[in-house]
Length: 425
Image (cartoon, one colour):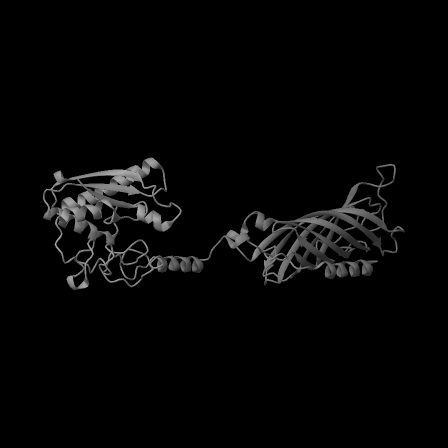
């Protein structure tokens, strides 16, 4: 009978072994051997060793997820007498279906160890107890049983783990003591006690993991939430590399479409050199960046303009001159300094002109916060102009809140919205 059951289980293991999900393997085979101990009932004067070597079990386990599963296992062995007590020998086998809980994952042991784990199991099944003692009562006991226990695991590799298990088994409908010499007094009309046989096993063994995945559910950690120090250091290094600004134009390299612009060049939010007047001469080389002119005249028009103020008004009022800011900042970006310098120089050349500094914010964030932020941005430029020697009576500033004229879904457009503009009075 034992050979038939064992062969059936092993064949089932092979037939049921399938590929695990991409995340982890689910199937495993378990082989264990060790000690048993019948606790009760035993005939008066009969005792068994505290550690009776003579138990073996085999199992196949399937995990529904990384925390819960089920297993079918078959165990057999024998009980014998303790030294100095009457001789007896009883053989047994059991077959059980059990639920399994991955207690280590439930209790989040992965936060402090990845090599030690704990499983809990509980189930029921049936078995048989037979007696080889010549004085034993005839017949074998066919019993049902309830089993529960804990299994410790030590990971040896992705395919194998060392296990240690302690299980308690309760036999039901047992009619003879474990030594086979005494009938149990029936307590019901059908002649059987209920769960009246108690014994336990302690075993060591190996668990073999099946499947093509890289790990088994016993050791799987979802999305591997716990990054190593090396992984964190690598990620921090990557972020630092992204934020490098090789040409010093205020635009990080990963956003800079012209990463080699010369020092002092005025650039847009993508790091591209600005040619405000479209005369083919970039602003940092153009002596008249808002009035087109030939290169032979350093980008300035050859004909004298009748009123410098008119051209300035056009450039200012049409937002060709702006001071830009980083997200949630009231500190002007480095490349914006030339705009402030240009405005201060013009005001010095035209002492009768007054100017308003107008602050704006993008559409991210609450309206009231953006209104205050836009005013702080305008105030920052106002302070720079006063520091450059412009009389405060010629200047005013005001925050206008969010600039809704740009596409707020575009990062480049939002950068253009984060600005301070000027208006000639």
